[in-house]
Length: 598
Image 1 (cartoon, rainbow, N blue to C red):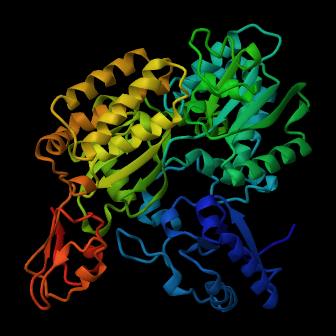
Image 2 (cartoon, helix red, strand yellow):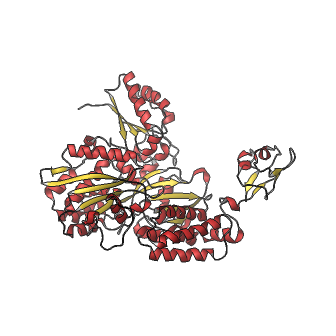
Image 3 (cartoon, rainbow, N blue to C red):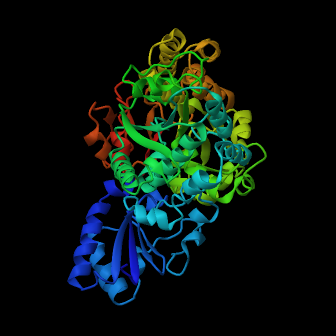
């Protein structure tokens, strides 16, 4: 085995890959060869480190120096200064948003972004090469599968998952062990294990990052699940828009087969299990379990009424157990360390940790894994670094299109399944979008309804027609044509859809409107009654005004496409509201901050 004095870990997640991390790896290898360091220093492409805002990320071990926003032209300096001469490149070292300190002398876990986290599902992401099974094995990989197959009965495995309190991380929060038990109890000559890696929520990328950074964890967990319920085959349903995840998953499955960890007679126990990948075309509705299974079978991805539930009649009309990626990512650790270990984290009814994709108006965008019960304030301010540019926090949207928007007054809400529902939102799969004072909550609701209308499968009338009627009303309101009674119509439609739609996605489709009406009703009323957008966001309701700060430089008049600005040189100018197109070109051009939106 080769021994290296230093390891250079380069983020190979989608975010950093799109910023050129593959080029960084090539450049590192070239420079190491030029300096005869290729036998002393090894470059490893990992999965996502989590701190996407700082990408591309490079971490040098054993000292743990965290370099951020590394460009190809920086590689030469890192190699010659740090790896050859032992001098850290200070201007590339990551600066903590909260402390304004560099991490040159700090361990990774001391960076504010990581300090409040507890990584279980993400434990290997950014740590190992996801395409090297030996590195996964070195991190106790497949030990849980060995333990389950050689020293536990199927019932004991299910009981361990039950006692751990693990709940489905795909959004519903159904007890995982209970789902396994139902499928185990179903009698059939063939059963299946399935993984939902479709991840259709806007702003969500938790499952993608786990598959990209630690694919063997999902393979191992599905094999354990297969053993527990008596299945010999499993299917991973992943969207085709995740090419890196699909590639690494394919490599990992082939490696597991080569090592005898998938296939026939695993660990000499007589247990047979194999996995297959099925690509989805990106339909949001295929995140619903029955629609997903229809898609795997090659049918149109539409939901069906339940019962029968998949545990009784699922894939190919056989009992099927379906969990999402993050749920599976916890399984091996529970089997390895025990249910009591896992249940010691989190809250009474929501055990363990939860991964969130933190995005929107936040300093530290990226992946966050925290114990259940951590407050929204801790996630947004202590981990996320707060709101950029000194702006005021307005709302946080959790749960994707099925969730809701929570205001500042609820920032101290502990994040778990029950508390979020009580607050007017839901956990969902884990998207968490932060909004500031410049966001219009009516337009946010309109955005999500527009997404839902596009993604509706059209099978049931409440979702197909009802959401369109809601969207029409919201479009009118943001375009300044709202009228009295619109709010009441939205509420009536929302409740009707919620109580009559066929599947869970349809039933939760009105949630963005319901939550914004609950907490930001005044914004709806301002749009309708005053024809004003309090956030100065909705273009149709804006008016541009030139203040007395104007120097009369004429720059605004020269860029106005409608010739709506008049005035003499060196004197205050004026905008004709009847001619103004509200394009904002004048405001962008003004160097004196003399043009404002009202």
